[in-house]
Length: 306
Image 1 (cartoon, rainbow, N blue to C red):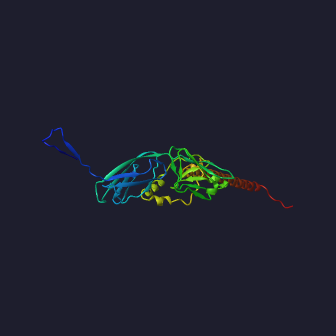
Image 2 (image 1 turned 90 degrees about the vertical axis):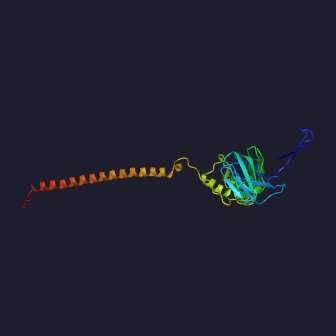
């Protein structure tokens, strides 16, 4: 708003303008600029009042730009997971009073989500069975609470573990406790429980089933960071062997094949059974006929006593 005062005793070109600044509430989204597919990213907020003081109570409405949203009544740090690469517009609306219908502050943030490119690239030998991880992306990856898993043991990366862009990290067996026999069952697992890499196998694409997407959406929006960071899986199932032949067919197809084979076998047995009955009937007929013929022939002879 502007207030202008004009003095009639001076030239009309001489005037003064007083600017009135209205203080406002400001909202800010706190997170990283880049996230990775399938890897939870920490998101928080900062609300400043009319005098630039930090405000805690109120109502916070989040929209994550991927079809999910969340409402809280206090500023908490939480984890959110994106399942596909792209750019997502995160918005935060702040309401000073929970009963308010209009927001007192709103802000937006563009988050870039990239494909996850990290793998178990190399392992050691009998003397030192080290594990090498490679980050092939152009951005640093936080691998805190990630798990190196074998059949017999787990190694969990500690808090504040980072793998730089296009960098490698080598972890010694004196730290992990792994031995050479763990080579064939070595996996890298995210804190969510997704298998990121299996040593000596084809790269795993970032594909998510509808079931684990639904489960993730139920939990990703409300749990604080310190709770989720301790939510490490205790048991991991081995991957099922993939059979590219008949075992990959649907159950109905397999049952259909079995039914066709059973039916054909039944027809064959039935035909053989009919043939056996026919042969037996014909055989009995000729045997009885021969007996009758011999009887009639025998009546022509007379036994004489000498």
